[in-house]
Length: 294
Image (cartoon, rainbow, N blue to C red):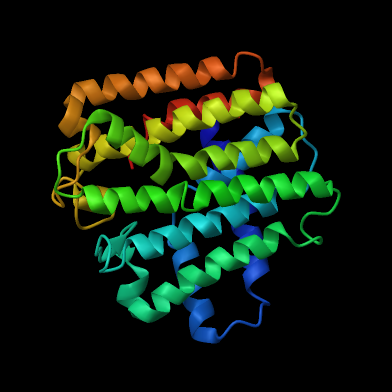
């Protein structure tokens, strides 16, 4: 399997859904523009691709996988809009483009994030997007996504990140923060895809384990890129180190962080040992996560 082609195809599917879904909605024009601006600002669409890849790994046939992936991308985008605000990381650029609040103002950026988060759950609960998915599965998917995005997951991780800035937190605290802030929504993406695909309990737990490991590996890789790439290459203006944040390279050194990322990917691949060739995209994505350039 050629991963680059796979990622491009799935990204096209997700982008098409997002465009077709938002365009006809009766949203105040300036708010819609802000939402579309941030959704269209680039990005790998990793989380929705993981929904689709996990769905395929268990032999799923649900047409709802693209819709669920798109909903999760909306949630991820809302988190980036809010993360960039002056009250949080105060970033002027995201993926090489001015951040939402720099273009539309802080108030509209907050509302654009709120709108994306809420629309995501509208998609997840809309029978026209979730047709043929049993009601019990729909409820479980909503639960997985809510936990991944909420106060016990991503939002809670952002709080831990904010209150730890400038302090020398230890390895356990750093891992707990990133398992929530970055890892929880990645794990939820994999679990949601598995549920849609009809995974049994054993398969679901194995895929959750995979999601946990690659979620943490993604953050370790991000921390490495933060100190090895320029601002132009990363498309953002301020590094985590410059903000006084504890990172994996600052705790373990650059080579130690690289070794940790490799170990996490190895453990993630072990979680897939019970799956056949249908899980090839998941295997390739795990390797890609720590070899990407941005």
